[in-house]
Image 1 (tube, rainbow, N blue to C red):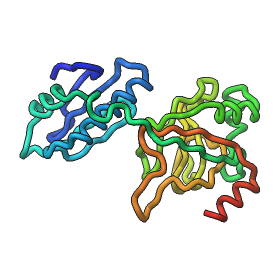
Image 2: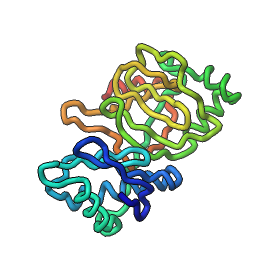
Image 3: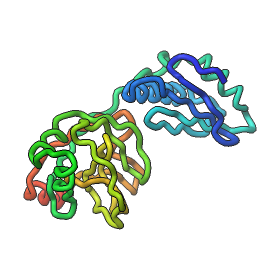
Length: 230
């Protein structure tokens, strides 16, 4: 299948899906293009469409094989003008409060050793920009945000922890994220947020692909008050 538009390649993905790649673009532009195609297909909603799985720079299109085949899907998306159907919908904006250096989630010294930055510099850099939600996965409500300032880039831990607390704000490579529930994890932890990342009752994530996130520091007292109120 010959690529076109901003799509760099198109490949089969199992018996009932194809995957679109946007590798030839810078990451943010690739992610925007991925979201544009996701929005277009979701808006048109052809009857053969089973599911859409967007990620950083790729989109899996799952279809009902009894209704259409790979080539039919290819012809459909080739004729579809993504820019005519909900082009680049702007995500919601979120301000996430963080108690940096919370005892249960404090790897600031490790990040400092790796980067050479002071604790204050780490916090200032982490709060000093707006992040884009590139993908949601790993666990319900776990959103991958980027791109982290390259000065803060840290590899994952060599041995993942067995327990990372709910609400832990973390970094790895040039990504930042928040653990929506207690789980194992190998990212460096900067602190805790009282924000609830996933509503299990309604199966709803606070952060979704395309949303924009800014972190703001709060004190232990503010964290405990917000956590109690929640």
